[in-house]
Image (tube, rainbow, N blue to C red; front, side, top):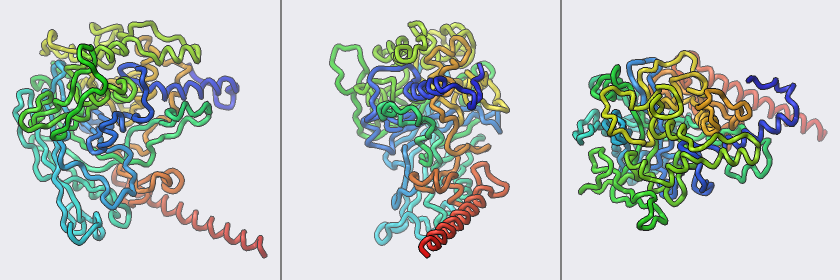
Length: 557
């Protein structure tokens, strides 16, 4: 159903749409909507989603993306971000990765909730002058190993199979530095290109800073806008950066038995391990069937669930967006971050809320939109099992590991993972609503950088996946429909980091890092439209200021 043109909409209709847009943001739900939304500790897609990660941003995994590479369709690109809400001008130390943590991207190819392939990044700091210098860089930086770069990082990347066998893919690879600004890094795009590292056997990896790709209006946590429903449509994450780890590999490297044709579906999630960390579920009591004790994040070989002599513990976890924020109650948030997906089906309080979510009932009570009937096995299918004709009420074969011909069906478990069917080709015209928009390459079949997961999940909560039709009254969602900066068309795809201060980003530097850094656009190559526009805009602002000053002086005369 098409909405009326804006000029023809009745006032009551506009009020209803604004109300539903607000409710859409409230519904930021994946596996289900739980009681216990916690504004004090939640924001965005796993940005500060739990008490422990809120105090440890270097370990805080914010978002995970998995998609068939649009320009190299025989490969898959996996992207994971850390350190939420990076203010671009956050010097003088800026935003390094932790050198005492392990960063993982994990892939489950057989559906048992355990990783069959784990990519692990570990970082090393290099300081040229720690005794007599405080600056991140001491002059203009023109390469990732420039003498003027006082602080830099390198990393080691390994891959680990399901048996714990680890091999080193790259060592001493350069991480792209934080984007200090146009004076220090006049061509940041070139620095990022230099930080792309080729992998043996094909593929490429990247570690560095990027503009945050996630988008939504977070002000909903201010008591539903205080009753003022006219203020939706503000991207709260505009202008902020994150730290990105990305890897592009041949599909055969991830498929069960290396056979993409027979076994196209994988599950993806990211984790952070810290040495010696202890993570427990607050308030849990013996004898209750609640969240289990967590903290078995890894054994130093990329294998979760084992502390081992090395003492590594998993402290952050992310698959599908928004799960820990609004699905998991506050008392279990830290424990969920330390849990392996193969244990998810044992956490009864969470699974029960997947089947009987509260947000559709709230929408029905407040706005009169009927809540779908329970139990919500469609939500279980979307977020815990993947979608297949034999999996639940959504009668389609899309992205369940049940579709893998060589998988042991008896060993497949409900597990919260971001699932991707690698056999679905990229679309020439992506739809931000993904599968609900008839674009089978989008969320929840993997996740692309432009997928509007907030609006998709709201529609799923209201039963759109069962009917195959968008709920018209909720079509506006949170009125934030795209990331602050558009992704590029080649690896690592994420947009260049912003350099304008966040409190000025929208007014003074709409294009963030590109406009301020004069390094070209995130799409790469071609005429530097954004830098020229920024300079032109600056000239116009200067002229406007002169004219205003003249008018004031004339008025005084």
